[in-house]
Length: 133
Ligand SMILES: [Zn+2]
Ligand SMILES: [Zn+2]
Image (tube, rainbow, N blue to C red; front, side, top):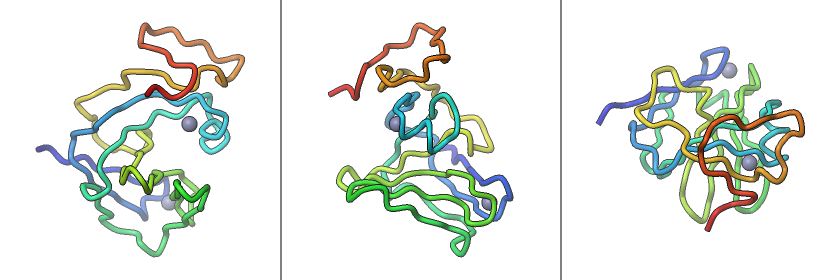
């Protein structure tokens, strides 16, 4: 299995994961929009035990969003790197941090009911107003 690496803007943090996401999609929820400062967040999910921190432990800043979700930033450059879902034991990786191309592409849009009013979805991927079952 090919390994992917990801890093933050200042390059102090590097992560590694197999090129084998369980899902990959674009989230338009208002929280992802605020968190990323973008119209939507492109994320890929992978089992937490397949995710590795290569370097930069001392730069990790963890925001406890809820009992279910921790979000990790770089303390130095503030890049949003990934979130950890506790009950499903998944890491949701922000695809923008990847340094090499994954074999998969985002295959859906979720939370389109709260998408940015100026943002237009121009592809034919399935859209879900909230989270699909
Ligand atoms: Zn950084
Ligand atoms: Zn979201």
